[in-house]
Length: 374
Length: 78
Image (cartoon, rainbow over all chains, first blue to last red; front, side, top):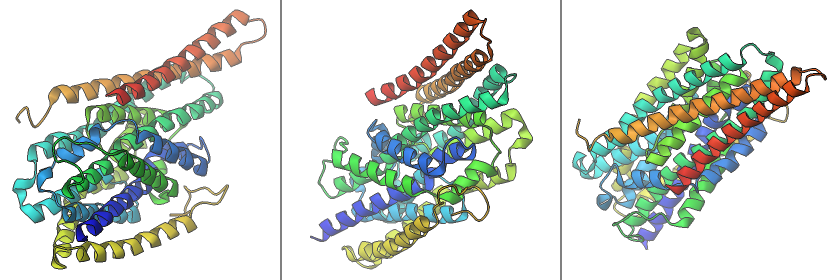
């Protein structure tokens, strides 16, 4: 009975994490479209939410990597998964509040690794998997997006540079709808799968699924896709402002190049099973599209803050995950610890959601100007 | 660094596909924009030029959309 209660709490927490992931990462998907005025903010977010949902059904390779690649799945307990999720949610909310586009993926894996170390020590961690499938791709991905976006915008300017800007902007706004759609689809594919992997781990720990093989049930795919889509629909205006205007001032062609580069990198990595940070990739794409035009166009101070948040994410989420595990165990091995912690989190999340709904932009209001919603 | 830590072939594949797809789709769409803009600038007596530019625009759109769709289908089949 206690095990069932913990399982329900863990699945609920995983869905809550997925919601915060969508909420936090909305900026990645829609910032360029909104900042270049390609579509109204509400339409962009609804469109992104729908494609996030569809994207969740495309592939399961990343879910398998998250479930099997970093920790010994046979040693995972539901309290460990729960503590890892809390670590990720807490870090997501903190960086959202500060307006920093940090990585939800790295927060999730950091939280899980921290809780695992607190429970079983360092030996339960697959160091090779962590380095080869997470840390090295995390370093390569933003650089790759930077170079791809820089190459793309250089070629675009060569082809259309001498044409009338009015017509070119009009066509690239249309192009941004397609590249933004592709980006939303790739975001749903890569990010929703991380939660699917975590939920499947919890089901294995509860013996609902065999530990051999890694089968993700359909209801897990549907619930993860729905949660990330709902989170995306709720929006996170603080980060949209950072991504959309504070790194560079973009024209429509730059927005198109950044989105196309981001979608290409995320889709290619998803196909290879790498759980990339979509945040890292889009930030790299935005910087590349800006730097190729003029190095000084990029506000390197803001970019530096983002890089600092990236570097902090894994250790900070791991620390919160480990502390949460210790706190949950302080209430005993049963359901009381997760119950108390998740009730506190639910209250916090409810407050955040209501605040987000109240402060969403009204029709015609510009979310990118000072005093706009958070 | 051991081979089990880093699958160089897989990472090289991601790099090549990302660069190839990201840059070629952008180039194809830019070609479409160029064709469409130039087509819009043609006068009444320049029907053949107009058709050529419009054809280029359509080819660019078809190429960029087709490449994007192909990428998603490939991913779904993996």
